[in-house]
Amino acid sequence: MPEPRYARPSRSLIKESLSDAYPGQSGEYELVALRVGRLQRAEDIELDDTQESLVRAWKNTPHLISPIVVEPQGGSYVIVDGYHRYDAAIRAGMDWIWGVMAT
Image 1 (spheres, helix red, strand yellow):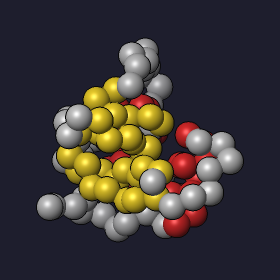
Image 2 (tube, one colour):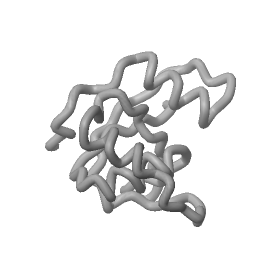
Image 3 (cartoon, helix red, strand yellow):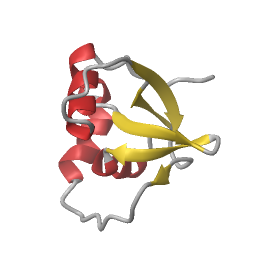
Image 4 (tube, one colour):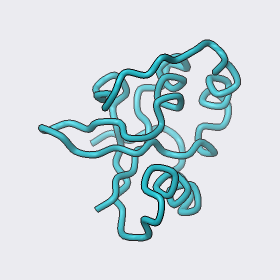
């Protein structure tokens, strides 16, 4: 499976993403490469245009952005946490991004 063209996120970024989505979670996780545009949103969230700095970050330093948090559902993944990062990745023209899920 192809992967994002930037380095895997550090363990600290992964742990930060998981603790935001699942407070108190300290268990195992799986890092997955996700095709942008093929993810489902768990809920509809109104996104705004104040994300330009995040879009620039995706273009310039994607390896410093925390992975989104996903859960498997019906053969694909649903975004649990990271809607703004996901939306900014789309706007930045990213094809693949890193996601993490608790196991």
